[in-house]
Length: 300
Image 1 (cartoon, rainbow, N blue to C red):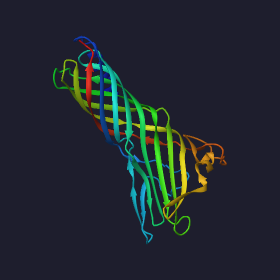
Image 2 (tube, helix red, strand yellow):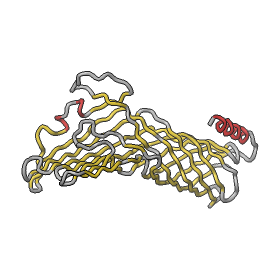
Image 3 (cartoon, rainbow, N blue to C red):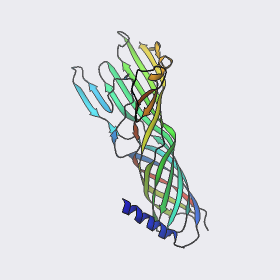
Image 4 (spheres, rainbow, N blue to C red):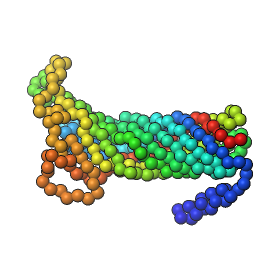
């Protein structure tokens, strides 16, 4: 790895020193989609144990008591995105750029329990803005021109959202089901990952090009805090829903709706009026995707 870094730096320095044509600014904009890569186990999304879902599993309990257990692994890095990038070419071969990437992740089931009495499911997704500083390298061909981008991906805004539903058949007595809807939001700490892409550009006008690329990102986001922002329990009888007193968001103590992630902490007597500390979690947001769009140069 050290030798490869030295080689890349040497190539960059050499290319920077090449005096070939005038420097130019450019902007690039495009759309793309991402699929999962580097799958791992999902995090525990129910620290209060309300859903009876075991972490990262899909469990089906049969009427005879037997169970089918399926492991749920994956990432939250799949989804759609839009990107706008500003860059500067030092010469025909190398440039530097900064991209702004909005990401809207797919809904992903991270936990599920199905039994004759209880049906629960946890679904998670990411929404956010990333900054991507990168080095742009190309051989500078006049027509179909390949290139590579190598850089970092830094989440700067956005959250992880977790939506939970649970239904207990006859939970309120014969003929009355108890239904729970909840939504949580997870804030992140500063995190940084790696992004790389291989693509081609093709000129369609003197300063206008179209591009297509395959992009890989390796990103793990460290969680900072979490909060249950919605929590509603209803009793459903013959299709009529009534809120259950004492089982709404306002009825939850602070330590059951606010959480702080810590690497190290001392476990003491629970304080219902303070956020609960729980072990640090990381959100796997890695993926492989395709981007297409246009590139406009401001050079001569």
